[in-house]
Length: 102
Image (cartoon, rainbow, N blue to C red; front, side, top):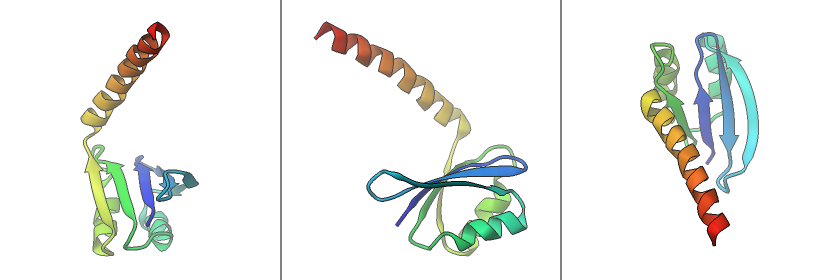
């Protein structure tokens, strides 16, 4: 099983593939059209897990195609992922300050 993160763009999508031990094993891009999505699907299996943001309407075709071939897809709310990223940055600063005082 692989974990696949997809940054969905209007014309191009960027992919990072992580193995079960948390290491990035592959990175690539594909065109956000039927041909590009077909190429992505050929690199995946039904055991893989995909995470992608539901940005605008550009994610819908990709999501539908992955679901059609029974690849598990989890959608992330872009507003929440931005909030998580911001919170992580803040907690990093807090953690660094804490470590300096220890």
